[in-house]
Amino acid sequence: VTDSLAPISYCCGCKKRPRDDETKKEPNRYFDVQLLKDPIYLVILISNCTCAISYTNFIILVPSYAQEQGFDKSLGAYLLSIIS
Image (tube, rainbow, N blue to C red):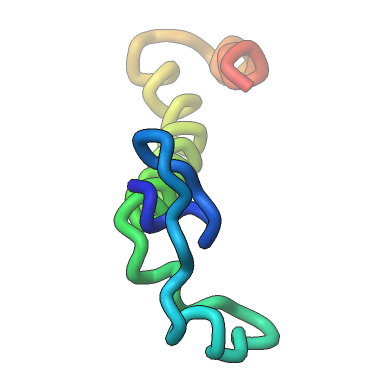
């Protein structure tokens, strides 16, 4: 975990020194590709993508499901506004 933090981080009371090859690299101007090697970043990225996709599909299907359960269109729309 401490390797994914800033180059200057504290672990067990000792100051970690950045490696020479990390300090000499010129970062990409638009996107840091090193982020894709960080497992914490990947977990957050995958969870956010999954949440966005599932929430969108859920919101699309709620009015149809409400109609299947016996509610009319206006109550299905009302349920959608309550959830949102």
